[in-house]
Image 1 (cartoon, rainbow, N blue to C red):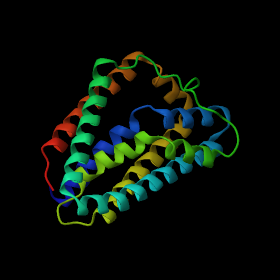
Image 2: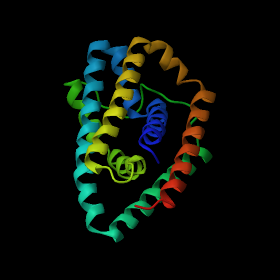
Image 3: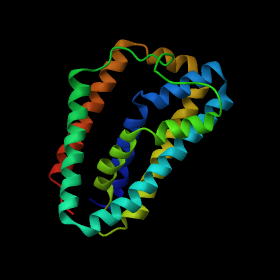
Image 4: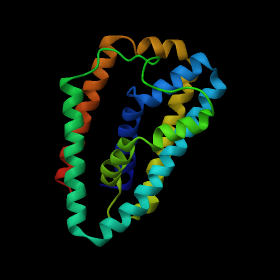
Length: 206
């Protein structure tokens, strides 16, 4: 995969992941609606910081792990493929019918930057996503550390743009995510993409 192909494929995948409603979306929607746009933006910056923290952990840990052991590389690859496949199947066969941004189990109040960051850092799925997802888009012969941070930056850029969109159109976005057909098909499409990337990861080599 060329550098251009890697960046385009990853940008599309990151965009799809960002647009899929989750706890981050719930936090932005709820904060923008109840607390105002300024605090919602603080939460978005906290979420971005959490992405960079996970990126740093993956970049340095993953680089050393892959360089040291072929067995570790294969184990990581198959575990990542299995996880993505399992997640994709779950999204396809059991898609959600609704997304309630106001009853998502979140705890509110206090420093919104810190809450956004901790919500991301303390979510182990972020680490699993990055470990299993990012290596697929690192071109052969390029630095895993540099490329990991570049890919995380792209993800953060897309995520920030989406957060700003939600903040500026809070009521419309909230209503859209409460349309059962929209949530169901978004989950199914994302599940299909996850399964495709799981297959790609399973057949990939160093």
